[in-house]
Image 1 (cartoon, rainbow over the protein chains, first blue to last red):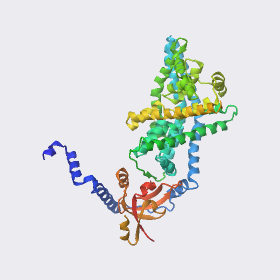
Image 2: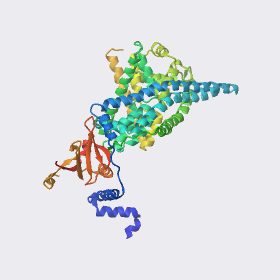
Image 3: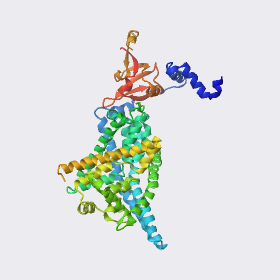
Image 4: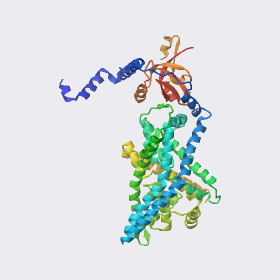
Length: 464
Length: 89
C-alpha cells in the first residue's frame, strides 16, 4: 500500500498488469479484442437486418477491370494522364489572366506611390520586390492547383486511389516503401507540400517517413515551367513540342527512379529500425459528391498551400530585391554571391548565377527562373522573357550555355532541396527538425553528386 | 504449427496468402507480433472470423481479402503470418 501512494492510479495498474502478465504472454489484448468482436457480432446479428444483395455487384465489376492483369495498368495511366493533361492545358489561360490582373495592380500601386512622391527605394522594395514576387507565385501556382486538386479529390472520392496503391504496391515493396506512396507522389506533382501532408494516409511510421523524405523527387507544378523551358532550350534547334514533351517525361521518369532508389537506401540504413506494417483498405466505390469535393480541395489543399506560399513569397521578394539592388563597388550583392559560387557551380555543370537562383528560390521554386534572368540581365527586379528565342539568346549566346548546362540545371531542379514551404510542412508533420534537415540535405547531396558526375562525364568524353 | 495438422482431419491449416482467389476460410491464429498484430486485431482478424480471398494485384502482390464486409489487402509477408483453416470440398 505504501507503493500505491507513490504511484498514481494508472501507473499502479500497469505495474500490476506487468507482474501478472509478463511480456504480454497471456495475450490479454487478444482476449479483449476477440471478446469485443464476438460481442459485437452477437449484437449485430440480433438487431441489424441486411437488404438482399443487388443483382449486379458494381464494385466487383469495376475492380475486375481497374485491378485486372490486362487493364489495371493501362486504365491507371489513362486516368492519371487525363488529370495531368487537364491541369497543364487548363492552367495556361487562367494563369495569363491572373498574371495580367496582378501586374496591372502593380502598375496602379506604382502610380499611387508616385503620386505620394515616395522615394524610389520604397517603390522598389515594396512593389518590385514584395508585390511582384507575390504576384508571380500566385499567378503561376494558383490555376494548376485549382484544377489539379479537385481532379485528384474526385478520384479520391470515387474510391479509385487505393486501387492505384493496390496495383503498384509490389514495386514500392521492393524499394522498402508503401504502395500508398504512389498516391503521395501523384499529389507531389501538384505540390510537394501537399504531397507531404498526404503522407498521413500511410499508417506505418517507416514508410511514412520514406514517403515524406522522397516526395520532392517528383517535380511540383512550381518546377514544371522551369523544366519545360529548359527542355525547350535543349531541343531548340528541333523546334517542336513533341521533343520537349519527351525530354520532360524523361526527367519525370528519372525522378521516379531516384525516388525508388533513395527509398530503398533509406529503408536499409537510416530508417532500418523504425517499425513497419502493411494493410490497405479497398473501400467500396461511391458516387462522388462534386460540391463537397470542390469546397474541400479548394479550402483544404489549394488555399492551404497558397497561404503558406504567400507567407514565404513576400519576404523572399523583399530579400531578393535587396540583394539585387544593394551594390558593393560595381556589382550587386547578388552578382558578388554568384561570382563566389561560380567555381563550385562550374564543377557541377552550372554557373554561379544558376546556383544563386536556386538558393534564393528556396521559398518557392516558381521564382528560380525569374531570379536567374534578373541576375543575367543585371536587372533590379525579377523578369520574364517573352519567348523561347529571347531565352535562347540570353542563356546560350550571351552566357555561354551548352546542352550540358541545360541538362544539369534540369537535374538540379528535379533533385535539389524541396521549397521552404515543403520543408516547413515536413517539420510540422514529422514533428522533428532532424527529419526536416535531412529532407533538405539528402536531396541536395544527391543533386550535387548527380550534376557533378553528369558534367564531368560530358567533359571527359569530350562531348562539350 | 506442424503438430496441429493431425487434429483437423477434414481441414487444412494454411497461410492466408496461400488461400486461392474465390475461396474462403476461417482464421485459426495470428502469428504476427507488435504493431502488425495490433493492426490485424483492430481489423477484426480474430480467431473464428471468416475470410475470403477476393483478388490479386496485377503485379502479383498484394492480395485483397473480404473481412467482415470490408476489403483489406495484405502483402505476402503479412498474409503468411495469418493461419487459416481451409475446409476441403
